[in-house]
Every structure is written in C-alpha cells, then in structure tokens.
Image 1 (cartoon, one colour):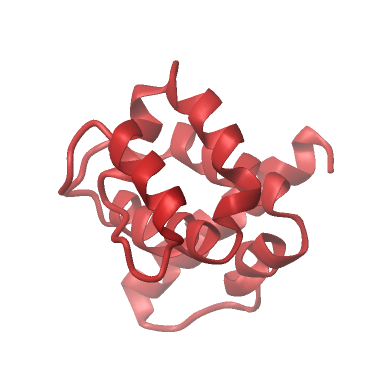
Image 2 (cartoon, one colour):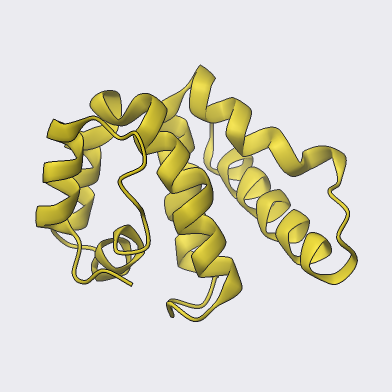
Length: 125
C-alpha cells in the first residue's frame, strides 16, 4: 500500500464521519478502514496515523473521539498483539498518538496490550 492509498483511505474515513455527523447516514466507504484492520493491521495503523495528522488533536473533537473509540480501539482489540510494538515505537515521538490512546477504553483488549497502552498514553479522557 503506497502513501496515496493510505491518504485516500484516511480521507474517506474523515469524510464518512463528517457525513454521518451531518446526516446520520454512512456511505459505502464507511467500513474501508475496519476491513483493513482485519486484513492488514500494520497498514491500518498507518491510516490511523494519517488521520491523526489531519484532524484536530483535542479530546472534545468528535473526529478525535471517533478515531480513538472507533478504529484505534478496534485495532487494539482484534490485532493489538500484532501492532503494539509499532505503536510503542511511534508513541515515543508522537504526543498526538499518546493523547489519542487516552480515549481508548480497555474493552476486550488483551491485558498485556492494555498494560502497554496504559504506559504509553499521556492521559485518560
């Protein structure tokens, strides 16, 4: 997956979320990132990081909340063991990711992955 494809999926996710906020309807692209989480979790993480670059980095932002409680949490629940090292590496130099992780709930994230998240995130919100 090249940079353009990552950007396109990120843009589609943002547009779908904004459309849903405005109309209550989901477009056909709404589940593109969810499908990528299951097929290629490392690529899905790249898309999440691309979205993070684009959206407001505030816990009160609906896009930021949706990214934390949506794809980021889903990724950690279903593929956390596969991506936690990548997340740990990225979080060391990415304060926005550490803030985003504060909006993730434990849900059914594996305990060892959750312990890593607790150490990485800057605050819980």
